[in-house]
Image (cartoon, rainbow, N blue to C red; front, side, top):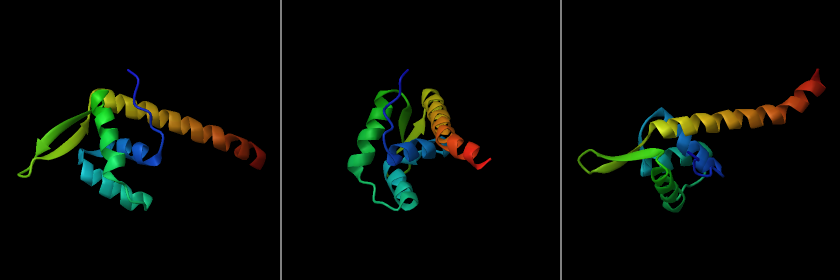
Length: 104
């Protein structure tokens, strides 16, 4: 199964955070905003969460007295996240390899 397009740091970091634990949309926006030192809007977050849910990569569930929606990666989502991290590692290695060989 093909995953959604991860075309920016907000989307990338969303998936990384969901690997750690379930988050609400607001919790993701707050955490990413503090790490990237930029405001993350609901217009950035919720369409991506909807895309992840539609593709079967996350599962929403209601928790707590206020029925806050928490998003959890599904097994397919965890596999997608692993593939995404592997591709990211390959990109970093490709970018650094020329500099490493020129240093030696």
